[in-house]
Image (tube, rainbow, N blue to C red):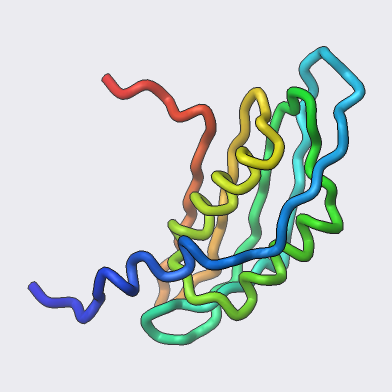
Length: 132
């Protein structure tokens, strides 16, 4: 079956240059959870060029660093004109945040608004669960 999707579509946006994420030192050794909700996230479908809208929720337990929110906002705004699939958005945000903050654990959940009657929810976690 041919869908018209190419390997370039699939990889679109996964290696794009994005603004750097800044951090600041966590002041606590005990576990605490930080939840960040982004209700107006936007990106572009790499196949159709249509906008995608989502609510992203990031939850993490810091180790030694927390993400600085202004830099995170600038990072997220760069997706506004980036062609990238929903699944890649969530996994890219997770990978970039993990690289910047080195948390004890983290999850990123994207609830993308319906298009054509289909709503997509994607969630990725770190550390990755062990496979059986």
